[in-house]
Image 1: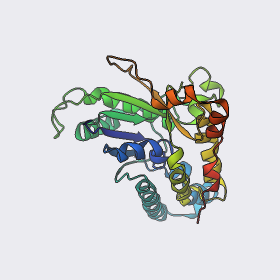
Image 2 (image 1 turned 90 degrees about the horizontal axis):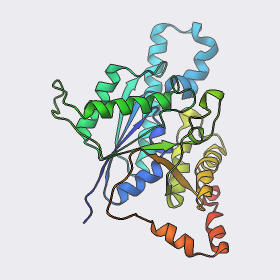
Image 3 (image 1 turned 135 degrees about the vertical axis):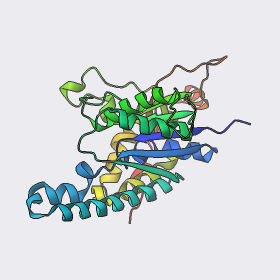
Image 4 (image 1 turned 120 degrees about the vertical axis):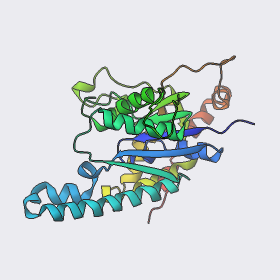
Length: 293
């Protein structure tokens, strides 16, 4: 019997934990693997409809005490939305490190804190962001990927102040990719695009992805049509690359090792299928029929 894996997802913002790789995590949980998701930041400054809209032009109208109170309230709202959205995929261990998302840099404090989480969770697989997204020195996703890489290295050595004790070395690292990772969106991104070398078919759970995205009202994701649109242009686009209705794309960091070369059953079936069958399978638009409250 195959041994269950432990998976740790390190996201820059709360919603990243499921909108990047929720379908993949659902499949892992379905087969008995355990999943822990962590968000480094609160995601309030750039995503929250109250914080970004209310304070953008009227900050002077509020006292420091009022601002602090609103931030606490909005953090609770966002975190609850994310916990509920993650639950759709069976993800029950959701954590927040509560860092302010004003400025995110690679720094010793966050590296050490994340390394301690790695030693505690002892993941076989870590999933995080592509460390070169856009201008990689200031982009939150990219910096999260860089912090995670540094934390993986740190966790591989002993921290004598860590109550969890000894070192932990992960077996594999995967970057959860979004369109901004695989297509240049600005001049500073040219030449730093990720190459997807592993696709996960998420057609069977695309309804969960749409509903989870729609649940993020604090980020205006409940705007009519948004959840369907982003899923079609993201997962639908990636699926189209490999003749599937919907897929999540990953860049696997370490070359895999084995006695033989694995070829998936889906690849083998696809090679034997006729052109009409292949196109019919790839043309599915299941996501468009998902009804939202």
